[in-house]
Image (cartoon, rainbow, N blue to C red; front, side, top):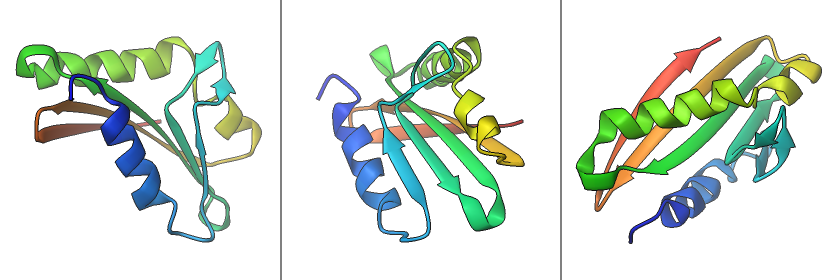
Length: 106
């Protein structure tokens, strides 16, 4: 598959099993629409995930693009409004059957 929709769906399925986690997809925050947001209220942890397809297997560039998009469009705004004290930003790059994940803490 040549896009990130498949991986996005898998992540939603994996993250959605936790009953005390609030998981949202493709919602507006900041000046754009994030791929996935997770709020773990009892631990005050917020997570933003952006998934990109790594053209030609360039995982580093795709992860950087994902994190740059999170930062440029301020996707963490809603998490901050909801008083999440620890914010994690994940840039995920997928290519064929492989993925790379880069974490940036705020």
